[in-house]
Image 1: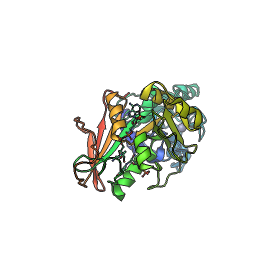
Image 2: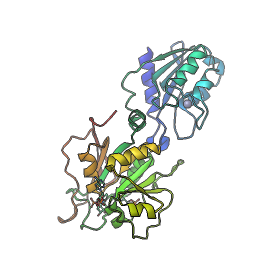
Image 3: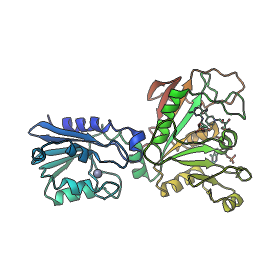
Image 4: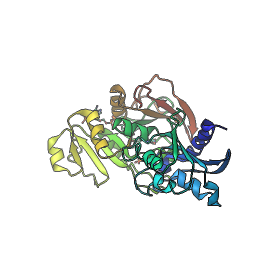
Length: 343
Ligand SMILES: NC(=O)C1=CN([C@@H]2O[C@H](COP(=O)(O)OP(=O)(O)OC[C@H]3O[C@@H](n4cnc5c(N)ncnc54)[C@H](OP(=O)(O)O)[C@@H]3O)[C@@H](O)[C@H]2O)C=CC1
Ligand SMILES: Nc1c(N[C@@H]2O[C@H](COP(=O)(O)O)[C@@H](O)[C@H]2O)[nH]c(=O)[nH]c1=O
Ligand SMILES: [Zn+2]
């Protein structure tokens, strides 16, 4: 077994973390190895809980086994104290011989700093930088590399490509199991975004409620260029943010924010508020705008088994081949990846 094989095992561990549980944290895996044998494995399972390296160490019954061992970890151990304390500072007390790292942490609070701590403690540190575990945290990587939120578009259609039965109304298309999947997607995002027309017609909740979560609810964002929400009686609270170009609305509503440079300006502003990822849940007009301006990284289309009469609101036409497709409840979920819009 060589470094790459052990690191692949650590990457498999990382993939045991579920994005709807790790939330804004990266999925990370770790393997402790001594004399070509595994001592323990671990992964980061939940936002705010122990990191992968610590979990691996906690799985070792006789801690003497760790003396002189090698730690394989997919991401550079954190340097900052964060929510659980610095892993690099903890690791240096274990008596390891060597630490092998999949890639450096793109988060500037940790970048190269974890490696520095380990090296200063006399450990041998190697960074492999191979590609297979670069793709495991697309939103985390995109946010820290581009200083913009990762944009995931999502639309639900009938089998014949419509998003509503009647223009100007809402139509529920997904069944319970598909909703659970949608809510897992929501739970992994910092924010959910919709267009003003969807807000006015659907009055959506935009919460995660089909699954339990132990982290915060995503922020709710409405794009309301003209300020059509100005004279409505929506009960906005701190978790809502409305981007508008209507100065009167922005002055009058505590939750409305003036933005003048379009969707890109919105994304830049969200990044400043540490919004790492956004799920744009429609409607089709807003989704088209993100596609046209190439401001997206991933798109989910759930095509349900329902057939709606012609005359309803049309979804989008999109010719790219999906990277993946799977069945969830009454829908086929197609996942599209924008190769020109990634890191
Ligand atoms: N099946 C599904 O998955 C979904 C269905 N729906 C349904 O879709 C319908 C609403 O969808 P739709 O009519 O497409 O409207 P949207 O919800 O997409 O809202 C449209 C508004 O968004 C704003 N907007 C769009 N593009 C831009 C841009 N480039 N820059 C700034 N603002 C922009 C505009 O505001 P302004 O006019 O002020 O400029 C526009 O009027 C509803 O019936 C709803 O029930 C909605 C979501 C999902
Ligand atoms: N119609 C439709 C969806 N529509 C999207 O979900 C929003 C409703 O969110 P909420 O109020 O939290 O349930 C709605 O405004 C629109 O953005 N989503 C789906 O998963 N399945 C569906 O059939
Ligand atoms: Zn850590």
